[in-house]
Length: 305
Image (cartoon, rainbow, N blue to C red; front, side, top):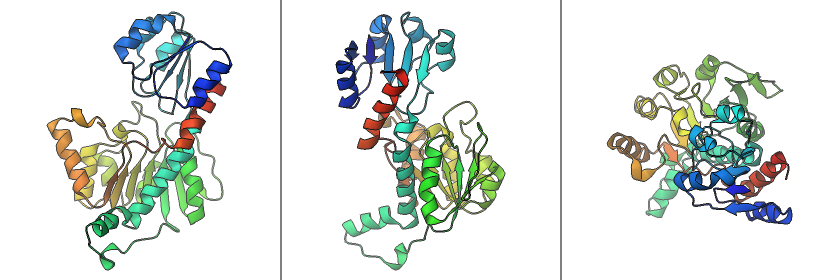
């Protein structure tokens, strides 16, 4: 039996039905509920809503595979799953275009003051000179992380004839006429836009820390559509206040559960949303209608259904 623990596109459900695969669709189930029924599962489809750790895996003696709708695998103990001969699949190919387009949209909004000037007009404020924008064309853009979403973003930037510097801590970069392999130091020195596209791991937690921001030379716009813990929020705020960066476009935060913010987290969040050169969206970059379908198609293909 396949247990589906998250909302999925109807295509996935219809495919399982047509292939006569028994499944249980429980998109609202919590970890305790899953723990109670997972002993019968041969396959598990998840997002980031639930943690699939050692204890959960130990309660699933029949589990053959875990499928992740999306890219990040930080909520799954993939190492322990491998020890138990449980295959783990993700589907970043399904939403990488959506993430790339979202990153571009946020960047253009900040460069051209779209998000702030729109709010002003809604309040009857008509300012032209104060909202004079800047062009993306020909800029140096640094991309940190080049798995699936990084290349998708880079391909969109090529239309703007940007010089694209790419660094990935996990793989060697194969350059092309518009993409240059670079180290982190070069990106910090030369880029006027820096976008993060790395998975969350021990290596990448707070990769953007105070040392990173202090090394920046061009006062870049910072974009994060990967995971909130990639950026040290306190260090980001300090960089904004010290004018080390020109702005920040964030689709992810260190704590995205608004009802659970500590006093310090709430204070940092309030500071960010008050700044006109900061744009925050609610982790929707890879959440388009098209991506919702494509992730299901990719995952079904990988698990052989």
